[in-house]
Structure formats: structure tokens, C-alpha cells
Image (cartoon, rainbow, N blue to C red):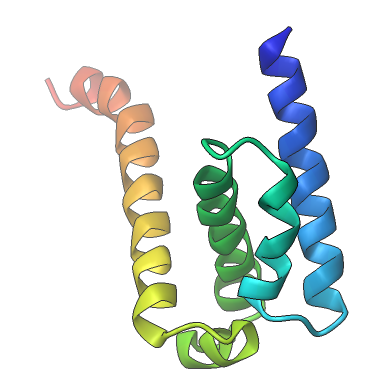
Length: 107
């Protein structure tokens, strides 16, 4: 039951943060809504939400990392690090899915 509760809290928090960003709030201001959550969930949601915004704005809409950083009022380095984590996670996921296929077809 704890997992379902955490999933609900996560989804609800992301929705609320999206609304705050849509109102023109900064990333830090949007993260203030997380104060009502358990302390151990906050950094996970913050990190995921930043990756969501970077994925949508940078990869989805083609905005530069510098523009995304300005939009969120975050340092360029923070947004770039998030972009790099997305790429690393994608590479790990993609290579993990392909490796069984590649090993069968290359021998």
C-alpha cells in the first residue's frame, strides 16, 4: 500500500509543481509545495521534475539549456547536469534493451 500512496503523492506533487511553473513561478518557488511531503521524497521529486522540464523544453521544444535555465531561474550548470543525467539514463536503458539482441545477432 505504501507504494501506491507514494505514487499518488508523486503524481500530485508533479501536477502542483507544473501549475506553479505555468503561473510563472521559478523552479525553487514551485518546489516549495513539496514542504508538505516526507523529507525523503522531496529530492527525488525535485530531481525528476527538473528532468521532466528539461526533457519537455530542451528535447521536446528545442530550447537551449541556457533558455531553460533562465526560464526556471536555475544555474546553467544545474540544468546541464540534469540533461546529462537524462542522456546517461537513456543510454543505460537503451543499451540494456539492445544488448541481448546484439549478442544474438553478432555471433
